[in-house]
Image 1: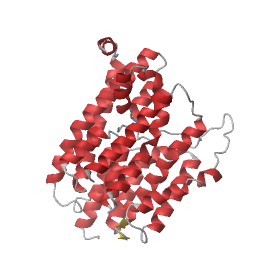
Image 2 (image 1 turned 45 degrees about the vertical axis):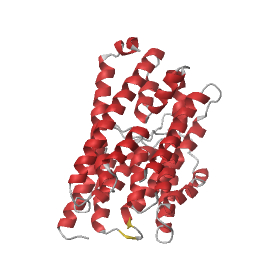
Image 3 (image 1 turned 90 degrees about the vertical axis):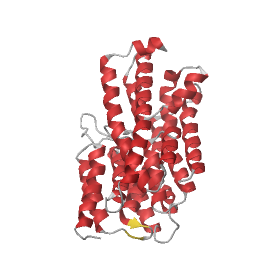
Length: 249
Length: 102
């Protein structure tokens, strides 16, 4: 391992540090929002260490905060994390064949270090990028969450502070970069309409899962072929990563 | 959120993470299939954003929250950093409530 760390170049170190700082602030907001939703600091920390996937953590806490059951929140969170399967296929070579590195490296797999690893073509630099970024984010995230949770628990009335608006805003920021292609927009619109229509009549949490019924909409929204040399930035059909710029595990 | 639910979420997440490296030698997912694995997340997130913006339990959440989220949406669309988006939502909603908007 030591030989890997010795090859961390200044560029990579600077990127990892910047991401770590961004994730620290996001982790603080997760801790504060979790506290507002009634999670004890201990549960918030357990969740962050064991799950280590910010989007699903925000989503699960939002479902519980709106009255959904903890089980539904967990199911929705797991579905959100299904995107790690193709990530793992893409960076499998980075984790090698040893069980120890596979088991530990898999837990550190988030949008950002996968993107960093894929940006490197040299196998050695891929490994360094993956492990450095992953480890930095893990440490940063898990220090930030208890800081935010303890601070959030002392802030006072969550409604007066507008924290109930912070939930959907955080989720929207996570969703927006993924809406660049037409099929994703069709599924998002369908899911939102279904959930809104079902909320007054179904138990809390169920309407969100019912939104999955919108998936077949994608079949009718086949991405149009993009004419060569006529691609508009942001309007192409290239799949976008499900991550905001600026970082979050 | 209970500890059991957290453990369930953690186990499911870890299973998806570990599956890739373990299956990597055997299968190759096309770009098309990879997109299909991303779409459920998009449907769920959109549903969450919509319901958490407009409803408090089964009732309308009130204009303070809706306007707060709308301002945040504008900030996110203009590519403001994550933290600015979240703070904008909370600050606008808190100020509107201070001014008496429900």
